[in-house]
Image 1 (cartoon, chains in turn cyan, green, yellow, blue):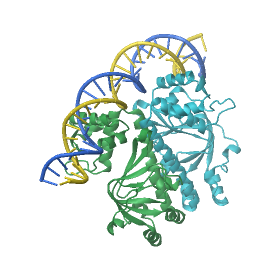
Image 2: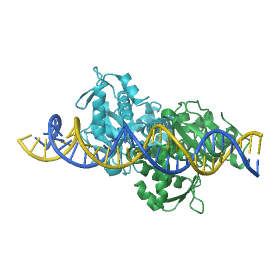
Image 3: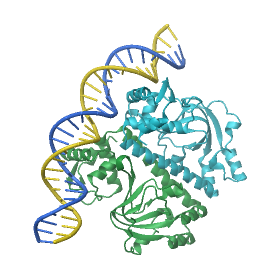
Image 4: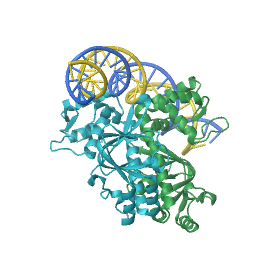
Length: 233
Length: 233
DNA sequence: CGAACTGTTGAGAGGCTTCAAGCCTAGTGG
DNA sequence: CCACTAGGCTTGAAGCCTCTCAACAGTTCG
């Protein structure tokens, strides 16, 4: 199911922009450069599947990846989206477990695969790399803990408003305040942890309340402050 | 509010049992030993508070600590319990953020405080320590992700059954299959993410269905397989 | 151009929360 | 040691939020 397309450009195969690799010395960076493999993945393709054994982690240099778990009745629970500059699949790799999530391409993406052995080499060789890695995981853990609290205590309405604001923070808006990531209603529902119909009804209410404007999957922010009030932040 | 009691015993101040420190060389372990500070904390005392700046992390050598976030209307969301052999407060410390949770003593506990500088020294000096630390955080992140999926997709009934099974795994049973951690109904509710009354009603149903027996806060497991069925695992 | 998927709306059911009232227990102080 | 108080526990009733089911419109893509 992994569908690798034509090779990406030189530019897209460059990892020097990644904060994570900033502290590598030239020799280490060179090894990274030699051992990585970059590929273009088209929309809808699966990077890795829940339960599979991973051979390395991936750096996203272009596009958007959806990370989700499969729950009851095959219903997706979206854990996060990864975009340019972020890494995926590192959690299961580091803890040496089978993948506990599936990663699927939402927007055509370029990923660089970095073998487990290279990761171990960097951890052994460069404490600053390990330290940086620790910080990345710890931040993701904080976000997960916050999400647990939200999902356990807030109403669906509050959570949807919060998810919209979260998307606004993570994915830029265009000149008209339109969200630059387009998700289906079902995907929004799978982030919020609710039914698709509920998302549709609530989005419609948000529009009536002049908080957002909707044109198909495009969401335009009208009253961010109002959304924040609804989200109860 | 931090209430430190009389000094703990020698034995309780010993960190050699911690898996995390197994790979330290004698010199490193000695430094750890010298720079740690062990204290006894009585039930109900606060180890650290949400929003505070941490000066180090803690190793639990005795007792049980409740880690929770404060959500809407001051309602607690319990993130996890830490017991002997586990570490707490390391997440916020590593990512150099203010504490995002509060830690409160549930069962009289002995904790060893390890200063941030010592942690940094170990990370710089010993890649195996960093690697082990990475694995600990990554496992906790997996558990958090699984919990997000459960809480988002399962009913309160399923979640309560699952929480009971989870407690059974993490805290041993006595010879009569009674859970060796006693929580209030409210604390159970704050784990499951529901109202106290719902927990009471559901526990009562579990008892009628001969899944558990209840005596005050003591919970005795009668039909674990049945609970598993209810939990939908 | 049709098939498959996505979005929308309505109706009905039910799980869960909230409020309220009373009971029980556990710890305190006289 | 016992009365007393505060907090935990329990139960009932009412109502709402959210889910599910169903039908249909709209959209996308082969």
